[in-house]
Image (cartoon, rainbow, N blue to C red; front, side):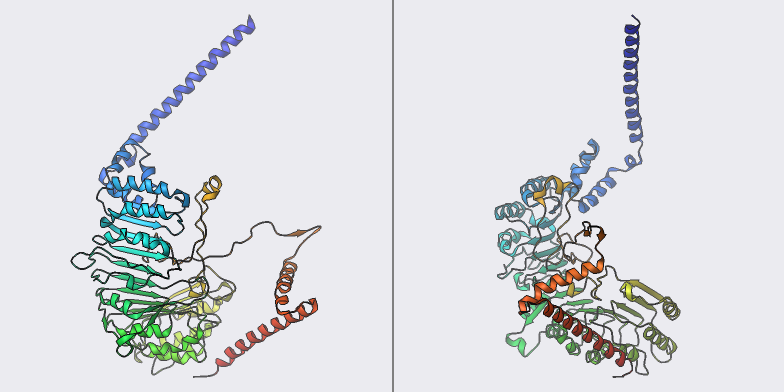
Length: 605
């Protein structure tokens, strides 16, 4: 009886304890509900909340779905906000290659809920191998292209013909157009846009990669402000593509209000009357002009044809691997360049016989106030500072801002001499002191603290920073043309996606300049690929750990044993001798360059 009574009492206590726990959970829910009713976010009026939803939908792909799952009020509000459903972004991390049909069904819902709101389309169709799905997607978007304001599209050149037909309804509301195809675009497709009163009235930004300018319809672009033309990007080498100059010239003539122009790897061919008489292209509003990885003859063709009285910024990014073309910089003396105030030169060899031509170019732009020298091959000749610090005929007398980026073998004494000379002669001698100095160097070549303190006393604003990221084998930053990657890196999978669906891992793609999702520089986001790095445990041996020197010797021996047999050197002794001769030759060349630099410090031009 006692045992039965104890059991009954425990069961009653457990039941009462369970009821109390349930009551406590109910009270917690009621308390959370009361707090939620008084939450500050509920004080936001619906109009402001709807605007927040619009901004969030432009930043995150799945934002509308997440918001509509928060509460009934939020779902009702976002369904009544058409502009929150007007962003269609085909991101490979969210919609892998096998999920294109899912994106098409999602697009049907979004197009219906967006009603007549302006559309933003960002389509990364490059890795898609299903031509039927691409054709279905383009047909779905065809009726909605007239209200499209932004279109960024990556697509294979062979599939561009599939999209060319539906794209013909673009134009009336289009403000931003970015089309990039694969490098195998041997037969470019002609695009047709819907004109309004004989022009494309609202287009403000245009980017074409691996597409000739002649693919656009011959019409006017009165609102175009920013134009980027990128030539063919090869897997290896830096050879550009040759386009007839008349196609690019005709496009420039149809953009009278152009403000910034970027030409990358565009090699032009003259034909017809252009061989004798240059084209005359007037761009009164052009303020920024950029050349990337282009030969001097093509740059000269552009400059001799332009009349840009308000041009203020000129950026010239040379290919450091083509140093034979650098001496031709003096051919860029053109009337439209004489009034520039900002000059950026990247990858140009400023030493030896190239230095006089660079000095001559600077002498033609006396209004220059900002000079940027970035990634000069080998080193920056110290005689450049001697000439800049010598009067009375001062070079670029109005210069007050100097940037030196990735300049190897840069000496602090040269900078101090330049700064002091310009400061002491400022005012009466017609030269301005350098008020801002930016130095970005490799971490191993940073200036000493005592030198930096002296420089800081002679300049108003000093920025002495290390290069980030830093490449230990070259004094070149990763945005240099020599680091144009053959393939962009694969997009990282979303958390949990790679484990759950390993077949959806995105493949490596053909090279393109950036991604279709854009940035502050009109979508031009350079991407770089690096070989996969082994992050596993280091090699060990029984009883002792393999040292770094031992691993390097083993790696060098394996490389030598795999290379020298190709040249008929089979014996181990002969391979060691050949390797020693190669190392000695490289050392001799390096020593010769260092001796030349030391001697050049005491020689004037």
